[in-house]
Picture 1 (cartoon, each protein chain N blue to C red):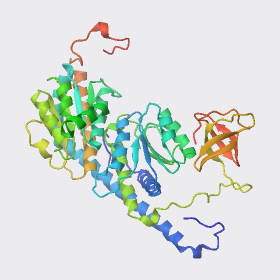
Picture 2 (tube, each protein chain N blue to C red):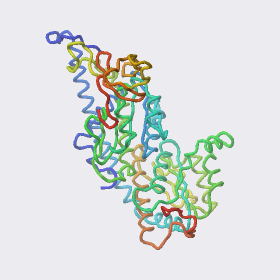
Picture 3 (cartoon, chains in turn green, orange):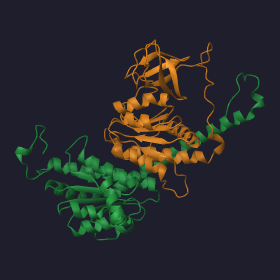
Picture 4 (cartoon, rainbow over the protein chains, first blue to last red):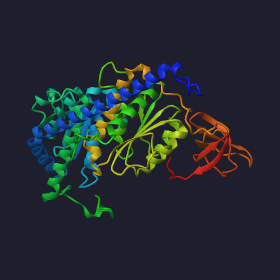
Length: 239
Length: 243
């Protein structure tokens, strides 16, 4: 909307300008209040989720640490926003700001592999085919989902379970299929109906899981790689 | 406190989010594309883009948004961003690539939004700075940034329900206009240096491309930022000079 110059005495000609400004003010106040209430809800959901999952976090973290200590790798995967949360989770392990870097991969990262599998064998198999190609029985598969029932994730978790991997699922709502199958060793359910609030609590669950693994690897006499070859170690000490 | 504190939005952040959401909605309404960058935490750039492109709520508008993840994100943003667009970053205040993108956004005509935590960027580093002051370097991995862009998306779509408020007030009615020549100082980025001693340089500004006199700041090179006034470059901005 353009405002003519020299409007000092002509405001009465443009009453809609005043009403628009009031409209903006009241909209901004509504937005801020809505944002505050959603943060409070998300914060409360994060706390209750951690309480509900405390025992599972401790147990899953211990098993993951043991697998990393024996040379295992972690594969994280999901769809859409959850695929980015899986990538953040994998990066937390592989490039941590503090603590020990651990081998963790995001299975949605490679567009060549993803599109080749999607095109040739169907989207349902994009992650399970990678599990078949990459994994050993020391490894860990982590699927992030809000529904808990995505076909590509369930197929990959089933494949991982048959191959002896530790299988971990993140779900929302009532946990979906992940919560009801023996193919998932640990299923973390965020009891919410909102995809956004579920993802926010899953981020903290992932962080706590990472912190638990780090605690084990700092206190146990585990080594991240059980057979270190001194010749292949670079000057920085990385294998 | 690890995770999202219940009072995370106190101290003005709720109002900052509200203002940024209305500005983003107005830009999208006028045809903007959103460009998402997060060099240290690339998944956040992808998550922001997918949020707008493929909404979690059926029936909400799909909006144009891309993640920019090139190793040279400044060059990638420069060639991608058009006047009227939106640039949104998740990064520390010290991220040199993001600082460089942000200080160029006025010349590109882009609205800039910067999400981060820890030490704040200097005042005016972006149009909308959405900041968590907690110095914990792991804050990006505990859901605090995720909720910030979830809320931006949610509030932007609330704004779309108020169609009467989506037209931004016309620019150019500020008191900063030079009375003598009615041409304010504007930021420009050099596209082509002059080919002769008294030739003009081609620059881009928020209004598009134009030729300007650069004799006062010569020599200039492509990528240089200059302040222009009445068809001439007055001064060159140093690489680290913020807006």
